[in-house]
Length: 193
Image 1 (spheres, helix red, strand yellow):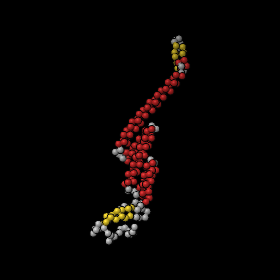
Image 2 (tube, one colour):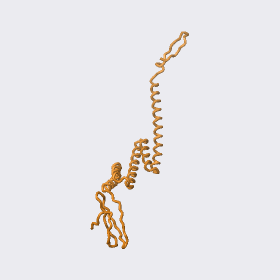
Image 3 (cartoon, helix red, strand yellow):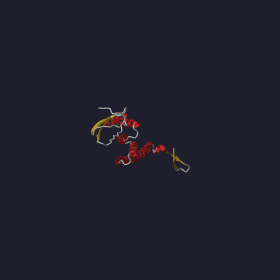
């Protein structure tokens, strides 16, 4: 290939037809382009170049997402966004990874019957994507399970206190609880000890 110069560049006397070229810039990924040059017309090429570090972070994030390594993928996507803060692709991938991680955590908490922690994860998902129906449905289920678990625990505590009280009462017999005394009139009076 021939080096034509640095951009912005005006090149004259180019024969018409399809031309293949590369755009290169230090610290950026080279981009191959195919340009159709028309006779007698001015042609222009515009292409956004991405920094190599950004592209490598996205590639690593994709590989990590494929392995299910969500925390590491999120870290790589945050690195990519530190380089290209306004990039919609990285932002979208980051949100998708956070949602996937949120579901994984919520499901793990549900298995452990830690419904309150699962509810927090689902709220985080809905903060990213308000219309996520799967998250909304799971949130409703975990709220119901959490309320049911709370009621069962409350009843168990109440039953435990009653059983303890009943066991204490079972240890005390009437003969030790009360003493009989005669009063002056010869009537029996039962007094507690």
